[in-house]
Amino acid sequence: MSVLRQWHADATQRVQWSTGVYQGLLDVTPEEIPTLFGDLDASRRRFLAVDANVWRIYGQQITDLLNRFGVEYSDPCIIQGGESAKTRDTARQVYKELEKFGVARFGEAPIAIGGGVLHDLFGMVAGEYRRGLTWEFIGTTVTAAIDAMFALKCAVNDEWKNRSGLYHPARYSWTDPRFFETLPLSDIRAGFAEVIKVAVAGDQVLFDLLEDNGPRVVGERFQGADEAAAEILARAIAWMMCELESNPWERNPARASYLGHNISPGIEPRLPHGRAVALDIAWTTMIAWRRDLVDLATRDRILQVIRSAGLEVWHPVMEESQRLIAALEDTALHRGGEQLVPTPIGIGSVTYLNDITTAELLGAVEDQHGVWLADAS
Image 1 (cartoon, helix red, strand yellow):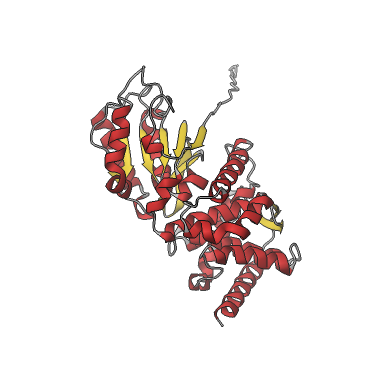
Image 2 (cartoon, rainbow, N blue to C red):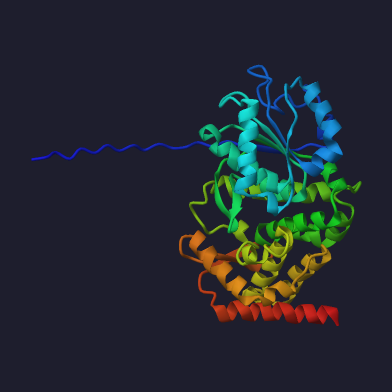
């Protein structure tokens, strides 16, 4: 008689990550932030990956910063920005550069400097290379600062957005609003959609700040002399960190931070991420209004905050119904078979819907179109 033997293991993976905002980051000294590039006493060698535009604008300042810290580095791995670069092909190029540099698995945390695309791409590479490298990130865009730089999840696009990926946060992430000064206004607006997401989903005080100061902060690229820009940035980051810390591996797919990320993957091949997120927030708000979860005044306040940031509440791409239907179906698959669409029930609070029909989806889009037409008249 054969004997069945079975063994069982139960282990917990602990994860720690830190993020910060520092005005004048490229001018900082080792005395001010000694851990900026990790433990340099163990090794001063660091692999460097930089967004192409960031290197073009800030290359000399980045070089000076590394030299002040005594970092030993070679020519940076330059990565083009934009979703079109967030692919397996680009990841393979980075693997080759890591091999060429000879990155040790421990003690030589690579440094990535750029926007959300670089964060997602390099984080996935770092998580896979030698089964996991500790890495550091400096975010240079509003989207990176609000949404990407402290996120655990990293990915590349594979047919669908972020289809292939893993959870591998940077050990330390930093941003500096001074980077935003050189961004196109369209990028500021796109990143601001993530701020609006936080305000609508979980922070009424932040929403009030956006109503009072949002258009000016966007127009000034977060460079205003008062405290409004700093407070907006800080509140958005603090809320996202709290949201992620309580559910780091997304085991609970009912996440308030999924606001704006329900049908937007079907829009993104045609529009940048932030604009798609804003359209998704407007759509969800229409769903809430149709179900009497918010009143007309609340609906219109949310739509006005979106408009005031220079973002659309409807776009012709939303006439491609099959894109939106397929996106919501795929969203449900990603969330374990349930839609779990976070939907406003007031400013700063959401509930989760599991029963949005195709007719309701398209009806809400028609409502968005109607508001857009009224705005245009």
